[in-house]
Length: 233
Image (cartoon, rainbow, N blue to C red; front, side):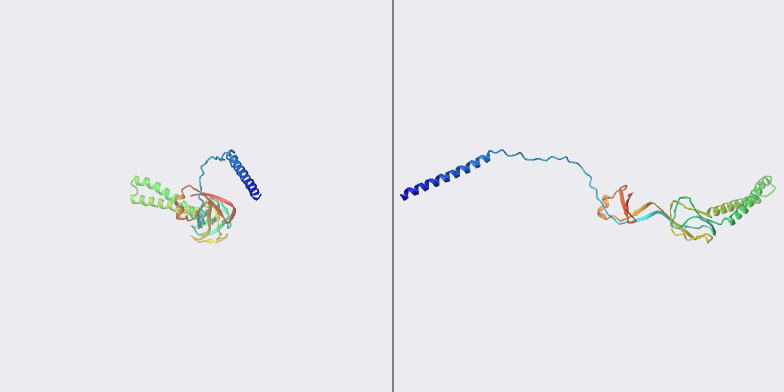
């Protein structure tokens, strides 16, 4: 009886193992025949782009034109037409030195010039007729030339009595007042041209090959935080 029971248990175990084996085989076989989805391929268009190297450098802004205005003649200021830190245009009148003395000198020199011209014209005729010597004629000619030079010198001084802005720019501190007496060479003020400006900066050696003439430079200034200025190398 025991042998029979053991035999039955063995048969049941074999059947269970066989069923399990058939189940596993069926699962494996069914997986092999399931179609796999195709691989996903993404296509994109290649485009060339220019890579721009940016260099941040601290520099200094320098005025292209900046001069100190000085008087070329001595005299009293009779006209003063500018203030400190004022914007001025090219040719704008800034100051005038009293021209009265120079105008009187010019009138005297012009009268002498006219006299010497008459003498020279008369002596030309006389020397041609051999009434006077060549030496006398030469002296009258020299006197005439001296008078011409004297008139030209005073005219130049009169032009120097009027001082105008040599270019458009911004006036600095005014060093004179109306009525002041100026000596030759006294400082009047400074004038600086603010447009355009030079930007002075040092480029690191490793970037020198990247810097070319004509390249655009963008400049920011603490005085104008919301503005960007453009220049060229």
